[in-house]
Image 1 (cartoon, chains in turn brown, green):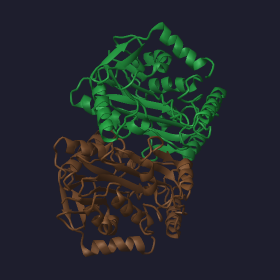
Image 2 (cartoon, rainbow over the protein chains, first blue to last red; image 1 turned 180 degrees about the vertical axis):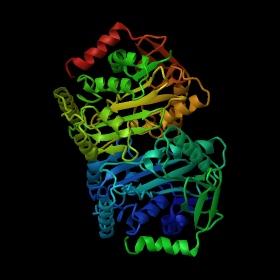
Image 3 (cartoon, rainbow over the protein chains, first blue to last red; image 1 turned 180 degrees about the horizontal axis):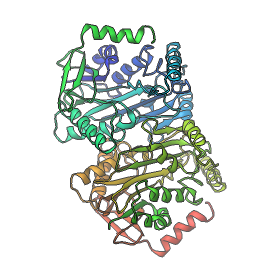
Length: 319
Length: 319
């Protein structure tokens, strides 16, 4: 019996732990991954996904999500969407459409309203406080980059019947321009999944991830026989080096992946936390740290201090 | 001296002929491809690109465009955008941004206004007539599919200094839902380009093209040593067969490609016209017809009747 669940960032922990049991039965609709991502969308203290997500430069929360069925190649996605409580549910619904499976902006919102998806003001009080503090800091120091906080949740799931799914949800770059879209809703870049091979999903600077179709590249490497332990880091290193050479810089890139047998791997060019569990391993939080050449990764469990600090940063005073 | 220009559909002919000479000098900003696509955007009789493009189900023209610099991997894109005269110019401008390089909907329109891009009502009288006729036909025959007309213009260019670009522009599916986005503005799916290898761009049913990152796949095949004569058709056949197997259908897919030496190739699962010229060949219109297994293509120049009929369909009475 093989099953596995992997997700980006420490924030995936509770939701994967809660939903991994769904993968012990056939889950042909991807309920486990949609439930797990919805859980994070609903959680007010994660400031980069769903409710509580940080707003754009006009203080509007605009959300992106993507969903792929690895059996059928069906993809559904939304981008630049306001007031939809669970973007991932809308993305899955759209994946069933032969036409109009990727909707953006007002059109996606209208679709959500007409089709009974829950509508909600996604801007939390806490997100407003973050916004106001950032505006103040930018006034005090105009040299400061306005952009940070692009911690997309991305997950890949495998159930006992070999149904695989990949999915993402994000509020995107804090202080982004209205309408800005990164890699998250983009099949091939933010996520990709083929049940007979494996799946991958990315987080980081979307503008750079989508230059390289990085999730697709990981699945291609798996297809070509490269182990899931190695494929994501190879992709990150190769593209990181290429962009540095050709463009002169490369933003943060992190990728998590599963193969069809429930083995997992990650790739990253920065310190990156993730969550994984499968038929052999309990659901755990890990931190991956690459060496400076990106040729190897150190993967370890976080210390108690790290975990406490993470929690404090999310729930504590905004500063 | 090597240079080459390839574009989807017969509509690329005049614009490529007019702009191919720009490729005989170094063109590091992609002026040739942006001029050529702008020409088509401005031409009122092409009903799937720019002004005169067919509207969505609410009779709004919503435009998508993408641009990639094959030297730097910079990508700029817009989607679901109204009232911007030349979407491709906006996409190129966004490609220079480190952040916010893909904008959708109202945000993209605001960016265009603020940054001096020409604003124009893109709905032509003729497009309204097409819309009204379609509404009438759908009332008479509710079984009719509302969707047709997804003839994206996509081009790839190579100049004498080996600068390569890929770019697309489209009004998307006629009668689409508001906010619908296909493959055209999506790097890897609608277009992809690496100057040291080659570039490709796709047209057809965007919902299916983006399931497979097909432009990226063509460039990968070139990288792996497969000739540009073969790579696009291999990608189309492989993905067409895969989707038919896994999903039960596959929409229209056509791809044009150039390699870094100015050689060209196309792939398609339906009759498809395209335009190409390079250092050895004058700019010509061709029609590609695949055999039923998609294992080979017949490529020939169109007959006089075909050309006259094409023109009549675009300029003649709407029926």
